[in-house]
Amino acid sequence: MALGGFNPETVEVAKLNGYDITFDPHANIFRSGQHAVCGVLVYPSHDELNKLYSRDGVGVFLPEAVLVETSNNRMLPAICYMPPGRKDDPADLAYVEHIIKAAREHGFPKWYLSHLEEFCSSPKVEGAVHTDA
Image 1: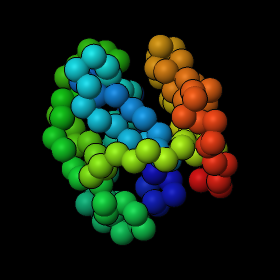
Image 2 (image 1 turned 90 degrees about the vertical axis):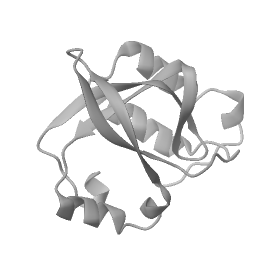
Image 3 (image 1 turned 60 degrees about the vertical axis):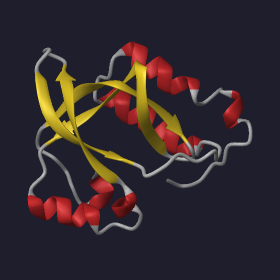
């Protein structure tokens, strides 16, 4: 978010049920009735959204209306941005580590941190690339 010129004042951890995450090479969430993903709920202005949308590569993501559950069990409507498809590329380890660091800083649940950490040691990561994300 900060790379897009967006530094939200309010950040709330939320869980999106019915989805899972993979890294190919970057974060890619997809429908999965047996899983949930965690993320942050923010409240950007239209100007902040326009700045974010103007960043290279961001415009390919498709907005989808979802219901998320906050840490105090409130159900809130949100917009989640989904990639148009999945790839089979290896994970970008530096990017995955950046996501894990941010997840820790925001206080994501331990079960979800463990799930993210699995991507650093999964077979798909053996040929993973290290880039400056």
